Length: 71
Image (cartoon, rainbow, N blue to C red; front, side):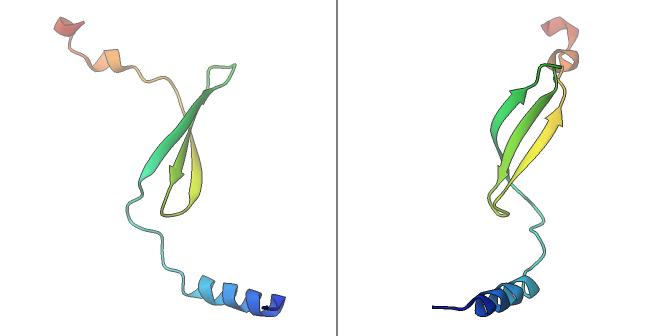
């Protein structure tokens, strides 16, 4: 069984040899939540970092990009 001191030294070694984050991250949306004031927040998960990321956003207006003849 390892002592606390051994575990801490191993963690320190891993931290020193840790590389920079990857240049490209794939974010997968897990959920979207809308608050009572209309604010929306999307929850994403990044596999390579093993982290969750929240992104606030407002409603997207897709219809403004559609040409008039298609409306």
